Image 1 (cartoon, rainbow, N blue to C red):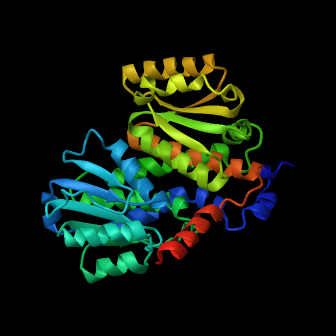
Image 2: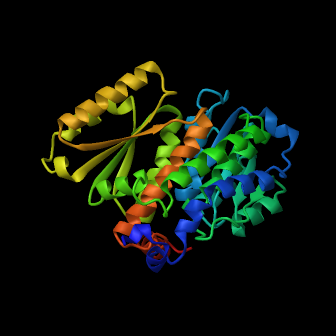
Length: 359
């Protein structure tokens, strides 16, 4: 029996139970709804004129999803910060949302301190530690994650908590509309995906088939519109879980430069794999661009795959795509026989950075 078809064989590699976190994503979303809905946000937060969402790595994924999913609905300037510093224009009329699963991410803690210095309105999301303690000290709203449904305890695998938590806080501040009806759409679509690609499905498992095709390839994810953030989630998890070099790109931007880069080196023909994330909700012009972009890629003899999000509504498609991608990334890590949880090079980097610069 193949490793990816046996929970017993998987458990020999997946020692921290990342699979458990993949399977529990719908439960994370429901749990986050129940807990984050209890957070009280002052009325003054509704009068802000701009919003900044801060987070690094797995803790920054929610902001990317919200940015692409609600791009046509958020009526005030919205930016992500994946760095140490807030923009110079942040002031008392700005809402800053800081997300750090561990509560110890140095960049995000710095963002929170700058929000305080600039007298911005701010909120925090994390599982505890320094970030949540600062939020308590300054009496600002915070959602403390109880990672009940994240057995691996990996930040990138807590995306249900992160995305839903940030959506609820943003909704409570009047930035987006997000209700229980949305949760009731999201979770069934995720569970439907799970039923088709879970470990026990052997023959007609598209996620397993795709993982085999992607093995030993450099993967380029290509998406558009509301699915850009979801595609970045898959890319992030591929880097961290499968330890694979990959990148995500957006249509129409790549139609203006990246296609020319397919010509060289000649190894592109065998080394690259293009993963397209398509949707019937894309505009007519974007759908046509998808067809033509795939045509160009295949004319360069690069292998392609198209995942078509089919659920009703943009938000359901986002979570459907994330769930599918989470399984693909996990199965790929099993094919490489790599424990997906440890991040040896991230840990090495942080240790050396601490030695060089100090805590």
